Image (cartoon, rainbow, N blue to C red; front, side):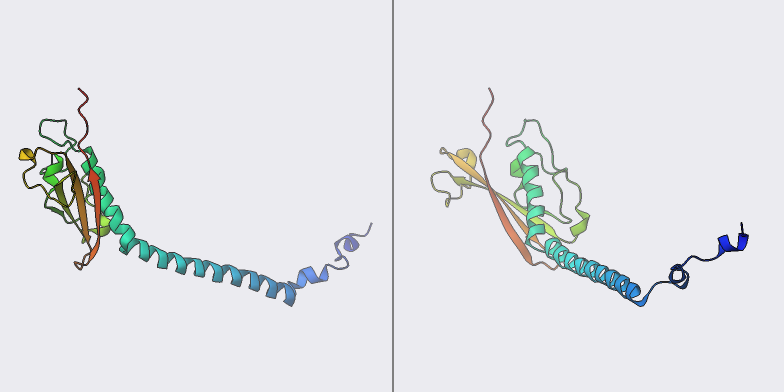
Length: 175
């Protein structure tokens, strides 16, 4: 047995000692380049879409829906179990002419992602047979009424981003 012969390089292994071929280097550069370009294009698209959703009508709708969710949890009259929405609002009618800046979530938490935006709320009673007639004194009105919850959303520069409305009817008594 010859010890030097066992250590001698095998045939064909010369290339492995010298590194990769030019074609292999070019192929790996093309793969890495394609991956980087694809990732950057994806990041750019994400940034464009994020801006659209964070500063546009979709975000305004989300802020308005927070008020609607809170309104659905509130009682219509004093004396009912109140879910409460901050210190000033214990019934649905208390929402009328309220403005929230920074905007509030349905749990009355500040929405810090849009702290310079504003939610303005109106609660209006209308005649059920003719919704164009606003009822100024619902307690003295003898007909059926319908309640409109309207939420206006303004951006930080005061631009109106959207007005959203929901028709609400007083829940039936379970008694």
